[in-house]
Amino acid sequence: MGFLKKRKKSGTTEVCLNLIINAKLQPLDRGAIFENPLDALLKKVGCGYIDGGGTLLDGEGKEFVNCDISIYLTDDSTKNRESLIAVLNTLAPKGSKLCEDGKADIEVGVLEGFAVYLNGTDLPGEVYKTSDVNLVITKIKKAFGNECLYTSYWQGPTETALYYYGTSFNKMKELATPFLDSYPLCQKCRTVQIA
Image (cartoon, rainbow, N blue to C red; front, side):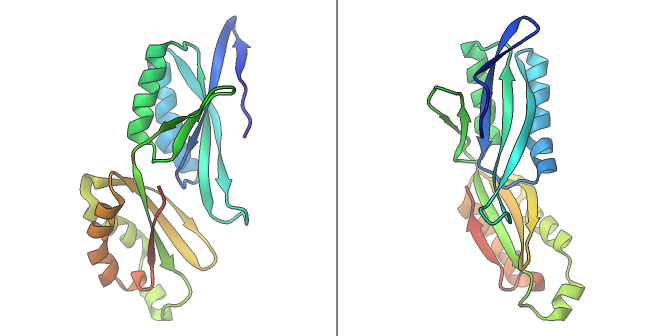
């Protein structure tokens, strides 16, 4: 993923930073969770804007791997960079990084990721007919309370993945397990730490 070092716009020099987000997000979710709020914040304080992004799929073109967004700073002061990094540390999962051409990457993000992969092929047909994945999303969110954020999903040929991010994978797993053990659609599911 290439990005510009600097570009001129309206007589000013802008610095482009590429934020690689270690999160599994659909493009619309990437926009709602990262691009739109960051763009509004940068414009509010008058130091920059967001100019698009992308979502990377795994080598087989199936599941999301990560995503990126282009951040243009029109006021590249130390204070603005430090403020941006502080915001990203609260929003981004571990393993995310802020990149600038020719400079060392800056690791950002403290959130951990929790994914539930629902088995889409090996359960009795009646389970699929009478169960609801939206109920699974809602019940897990309720079990987590303020511990995490449901961000996105992926539907593959044999599994459906639900992605959550919060402060502790172990805590999220502990809170989700009673529901996962009790709901028929969650039989044979697997949970994975994704950040």
